[in-house]
Image 1 (cartoon, rainbow, N blue to C red):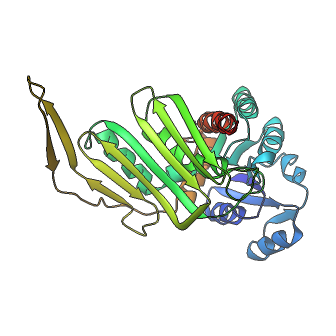
Image 2 (cartoon, rainbow, N blue to C red; image 1 turned 180 degrees about the vertical axis):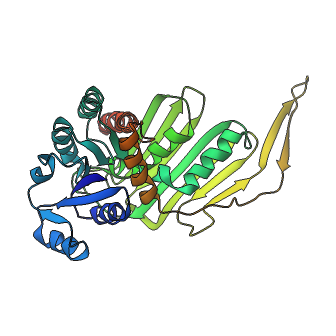
Image 3 (tube, helix red, strand yellow; image 1 turned 120 degrees about the horizontal axis):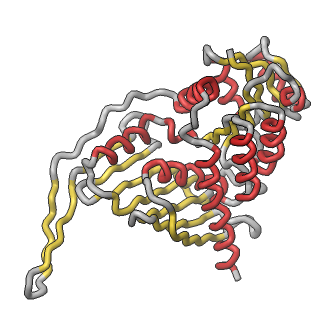
Length: 329
């Protein structure tokens, strides 16, 4: 049995705790938080778990194998570094840290100590995203031309990070999973409609070495909750809509062929074959994700959302922040 401790039981922590407690290969020993009321609620649900307001009870306990960090992003580096330094395998909620420098340091520290560092990019573990990847890799929709993604809602406004740091990690981790190339160019634009210090609406345009373009829109200022991604290929298209309860992925086998005669006359032909909705085996992504982390720890495997993958996301966010500042001048 792998012994685990969780630091943070606020907004997302209870979901981590619930799934960890259900894993047969994991023994949840500790839950740490500064808020006694939050701890009391978790103790009522999991009376066998030790609660504490001192996270070092977890870090310093030699019996603990894994530490789960579910706290604000500006604390990730401090907690993760202490855990890795004390020989713990570490799972950190997204994004890995708030800078490339600290994310790189954590990756190097984990690798030099042969420890597993994994980032909570949960959408990679959904059956819907896995199915989109499967369809792309099969060649059914041809080569990807572009991907557009919208992640919009009314709130939840953050106090210390802008909308890109809050929402874009989901989109960036998904496209990094779907596309094999590397990002060669980043364009970022944003607006501060509510808080004059933080962007609540932002746009990212990414160019990949393999030719694909990715267009991302994130906003906390939108009347509906939208979680939709479109993958446009040379032979077909995919819509992934996470707000759908069951039919999250739709495949459209349609495309446009272009031709030009010797005289320069341009013509377009529209190919429209049968569309379909692939069957998904729906599982809770967080359960799949945490089980994967435990498997990687037990078998010394690199996680699908490793520290290095998390670093890739932070690199884009940091560069985007620089561009947003520059565009404000």
